[in-house]
Structures are given as C-alpha cells and as structure tokens.
Length: 244
Image (cartoon, rainbow, N blue to C red; front, side):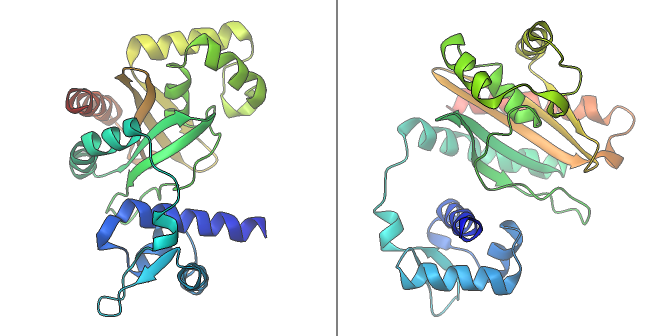
C-alpha cells in the first residue's frame, strides 16, 4: 500500500511540474522510474479519481480538477521555480548533465525541478521529496544554509551521518564541513556505490534555503572537468539569484 501511494505521489509531482502541456505515458514511466504497465495503472487510477486527466487527442496526461484544488504552493517556491527555469535548462544544455533544483521545507529536501541529461549514459533524477541531506550534494548545501534554530532539531532527527557523509566523525567535523560549504559555495559528493559524482552550490536567497546541483557518471569526471562544471554551476546560481 505504501509503495503504491509513493508511486502515485511521484506521478502527481511530475504532472504538476509539466504544467498544461502534460506528459506522455512513456515520459511518466521514464521520469518516475516505473515500468510502462505500472505507470499506466497509476495514471488510470488517478484519472478515475480526477486527480489526473488525459487529452483524448494528444494522449497526454495532466493534473485533474481534484489535484488542482488541493493546496497552494508558497509564493517563494513559485517565484524560485520561475526564476530558475531558464537557468536550469541552460545549465543542462551546456554541461550535458542532469540538473536538480531543491529547497528545504518542513524538514525535507524538496525537489522543485529536474532536467535529465540527454546523453545515453546519464543520471536519472529523483522526483520525490526526501531526507537525503547527508548523502547528496544538494542536501549538504541546504544544511549549510539553515539557521541554528532549524539546523539543530533537523540534525537530531536525522541522526549521525555515518557512512552517508564520509569523513564526518564528530560534531567538529560536521561544523567544519558546513563552514567549508558556506565559504567555497561548492559541494562535491562521490557516491561510489552507484558510480555517481554530484556537485551542488547553495542559492543565496533571503529567507530560503535552496540549492542547485549537477549529477553525472563518475567516469566523466576526468581532468579539469569537475572544476569547469563547478564554475559553471556557480555562474548559474548567480543568474538565478539575480532573477529571483
């Protein structure tokens, strides 16, 4: 049951981000990391409850009236998504790697937008909000921006990093790492179990902890490419901050 709910939530987030243009079944299946039959079952159920609708001419799915009437995104979230959209696409096209835009809200790492690399070998971005603050580059960038009043209870709930953040063994280690992120505006997370390199930079926005990241296969992390991508990432962040 929980698994089915998670799948439905992931599909709803995808349809929300797609807007009026909607998505094809194949797009939903690929981006939600579901098999086409499973994606079709989820969409069929959502349509039956009017959380989604399907255009009979284009066969594309979009949010339905029931979902559209639930809740209202925060003004800051809407403003950030609008300000970052062009920059996220430009960064994806120039770097040819997967881009992810995140913010911290309600103790979660919220996924605001993703753009997947078009290369054959690429990282498929997650679409579900989570608590992966320690193991992801964007998560670490978000932690570095939180005021002490928000950071302390979140760290207590998350528990000790352990293997999720190599090299962090004490409170002093964690404090040092967060200070380095604030000073350098760049986070590097090497996920050796999946062969993925993740870069991220904080978005320095008033009253909002947000970050933008690049995820790519570690095999392409050669020569000075990491440094080049880090520079381009910080330039994209600066452009988003200006637009915000």
